[in-house]
Each structure stands twice: as C-alpha cells, then as structure tokens.
Image (cartoon, rainbow, N blue to C red; front, side, top):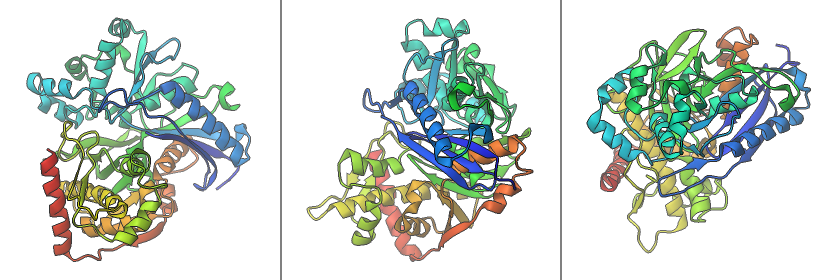
Length: 493
C-alpha cells in the first residue's frame, strides 16, 4: 500500500487523551498523549472538565502530526474512539458545556435507578437496549444534569442544548459546530437507543425523562461524520471512523468472527464476545451491545464490564503511594508470588457485571502484621483477574465457550499478570504485538470509511501474536484461589 497517505486517530480515554498518526500499513508514525485531572465532588461522584478534554485533544493531535513529520494535507481520514457513557450537555450555538461531564464511573444516580426499578419496566428497557437500570449508562446522567442546572430542561426542550457522549462533543467542536452526531456503538450505551431498530426510541426517552430534541443523529461507525475545521490542524479532513473504546478494541483485535472474544485492561476491564448478527440475551447479567455497524451491517456483542482494573493500579500509585510506577507491580508480584491470604475487592465505584451493585464499596480481607506492599500490590493485580473470571464464567453459562482470550491495554505488558489470568480463567491468553487495539480500531474504521482499505481483512492480516500464555496452574489450586474471591465479594455486598 501507499505510505504517503495517513490516518489521524484520537483515543479520548478516562484519564488521558492520545493521538496517533498511522500509515496505511497500520504503522504508527507519530504519537502524543496528555493526562488530565479527575474531579471528585462527592464520594462516588466522578467528573471531567470537557473543555480541558477538548484542549488536550487538540494539543495531542497537533503534536502527533508534528512527530510524524507529515504535512496536514497528507491526512486522509480522522478516527475517534472514546470513553463510553460519559455524558456531556452543551449549548448548541456556542459549544460550551453547561456542566462538567459526568463520567461513566459516577454513581450519583444510583437512587434514581433504584426508583426506576420500582416504577418502570426494566424488562422493556433490557429488550430494547440490552442494558439495565444502572448509573453506568448515560440516560440518568443526562436527566440529572437537566434537573440540576437551572433552566437546562427548558432549554433542552427548546432545542438549545445538545447531549452527547465524548465522541459527539468532540465531533461538534472539530467540525466548528456543524455536526451533532454519534455512532451506533456509543448510542447503544446510553439506554436511549433501540439496538434492534438502530435508532433513538421515544419510549426510552420518556422513561428516562430525556427530551428528544437533545439527541443527535446516529451514524454507522465508518460513515462520514463531518470535516475538521481547517483552523485546527491545517486541513479539512473527513472524520470517517467512530466507535466507543471497547468496540474499537474488539475491532482492533480483529475479532470479526462470532465467538471471538477480547478483554481490554484500561481504567476498567471490558470483555466483549462477538455474537454476529444475533443480539444474544444474557441470563447472567451481561450486556447486549452493538459491537459495530459498518456499511449498514450491525454486529452484536455480549459484554461484561468491570469498573476498576487499571485504576486499581493507579490507586496503588497515586492514592496510597505503594508504588512509584505501574511497572513496579510486576516486580513486586515476582517477589511475593501468588497471594492466597489477602484478597482485595476494588469496588471503588460499586461492582459491575455480573453483580451490578452500585452500592458496594471496596475492602481488603486477610490483613496481618506481615502483609507488606508486595502482597497488597499483588493481591490488587489478582483482583482484576478474578473479576475477569467472573465475566468468563457468566459468558460460559450463556453458551459462549472460547478457547482463547485476546487481551490488550496497559496492564497486559505485565507478563506475571497475563500468566495468572490464564491460570484463573482456564483458557489461553493471547497478547498481540500491538496492544493499543483501541486506537488501532479507530484508525481501521476511519480507513475503511475513507476507502483506504478494501475490507476488514486488511486489519486481520496485520494482527500479529506477541505471546500466548497457557494454563500452568492445577485446576484445584485455581479453584481455591477463586473461591476466596467469591467469598470476599459476598462480604462487600
């Protein structure tokens, strides 16, 4: 393929924004990353300043283009992937947010969700959306903003305000306010979108008290979403690929066949299995979601969401000062070995699948005088593997039985963790050469939309294995470790 044409991919995550310039062989030519502050107004509340996110995205895009040593005119397409469910409401005319973004981890609407469980039909919501009443999803966050910012609900009903997930907010700004759009994967995480009809649903909007006027247009993941304002990067480039971060990672891992499954370890951990054209209904509290919608063809996924994964390591570093760098966890784990007397349950913002308990909080069990930082760090790593095992067991009960799990995200650079994960979930773990699957998926979707690639097969051909981790632990030993985790979870609930 030609290498004088490039794709600018944006990954707007929970703790940082990143941009990478890829050539059409999926080789990264330049990149930049910038962290931003987390805002915690009250216990269980998490917010972001959307203007700060915007400034950071523009900065990393400019830096990535500069690092790649290309001219802006060589950018043929822009792709965006983003933290999902995080909710922004902004003025249509000015683009100015009316409130801080409410982050997917935020639990402030737990009581609203409890009230909805008593007053509304959760089975109807589940049938239409594949989701459930939980603060995780965007709908109750939108309603909260409209009810707590003076005059917001009136302005929303008058069409003066826009709601969107982070992708939608960024596109509005990138296009100079011309586009109020999102893609089907992000829309499917709001609880306002019917995943079967492929559009917003008036009954859902009424259930959550969200005015229809605030919703943008829903497009395919590889559609044209608009053109970038040339004042930003020196080029009017088409935005051609958009997907929520976990769906983008599934795409980036080339999990294109039904039954293929990936797990991404970022701030949280998210396991998605491709279920093809079938929107599989879980009997074990997993979510049915739109995995992709490319050229009008919808592919569904079955997903388990863990709220705390990499953020538990961040807590070890920034919250309690136990480590100086995330890489220290591997050294400490090698020092301590597998910990069987201390169990960490990192329910900092409640428990996700398969428990869906927004009121649970974190705990450490088994502390003794000889518990040191190595044990506590390693027990925290192990908790992420145990949570993954919870999801894999739920998927197995729903009839999905993969033989391998493809993994990506920052945590999987840790060999010790990947081996422990394989031992606990009892299947092989595959780590690709490029573990930045999320932003790679956004680039691939943008390239497809812009006609730079003929098919998804281009990405499948580019996927390469770095290392496969096989089961090395006896099953009875693994079962004993997991049983201690199950008991600890029971206690925090």
